[in-house]
Amino acid sequence: MSTLDVARAELALGVLYLNKAEARDKICRTIQYGAKFLSDGQPGTAQNVEKSTSLARKVFRLFKFINDLHALINPSAPGTPLPLILLGKSKNALLSTYLFLDQFVWLGRSGIYKNKERTELIFRISFYCWMGSSICTTLVEIGELGRLSSSMKKLEKELKNTDKYKNEQYRSKLQKSNERSLSLIKAGMDIVVAVGLLQLAPKKVTPRETGAFGFVSSLISCYQLLPSPPKDKAS
Image 1 (cartoon, rainbow, N blue to C red):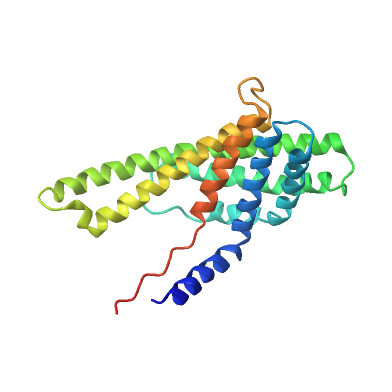
Image 2: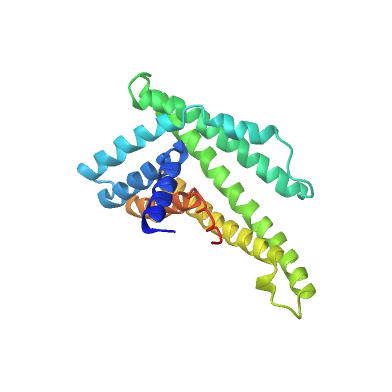
């Protein structure tokens, strides 16, 4: 491929990425928590950026609760243990509830709904739901990583006298393991962010720490949404 062809392919991937509402939302989330880290909860330009970006993000999430509602009523993958199914469905239910309530938070924060006390109450309930969904995600990922580890060990025994990294099935399981490990780290960070935003441990999780964890979690989300580059064709 020529330099121009490479540039075109990379720009096409960039356009594909930025066309996703989810990707734009996560980019805004990165800005939001980066500003929170810089402001450390103190009034100023950084805090204004944090608040305005947080409000702007809510528009991207209008009616997004339907996605998790759809996942909630869909059957789970065959062979999934019952505890993991229940945890997965609980995560979908909690996340769908969070996104549904977040629409009313947006109405309150934008001034359409005038009851500030009720808006704050809905905000806290919604973030408890988000924290609960992150806890469920953490437990699901731990369980799935355990299942993957067990199946990889069995496969390693079968491939004892060969190079396991040349086996397509082993490489696929290894990739899934890496992806789930990254999701586990992100879910753990999101729990800390929820604790910080709900001020459940204000002395231990400060606004700056909340911003730092949220910023890294957002970068992970941006990375997870990157489209796969096209494979080079053999000349």
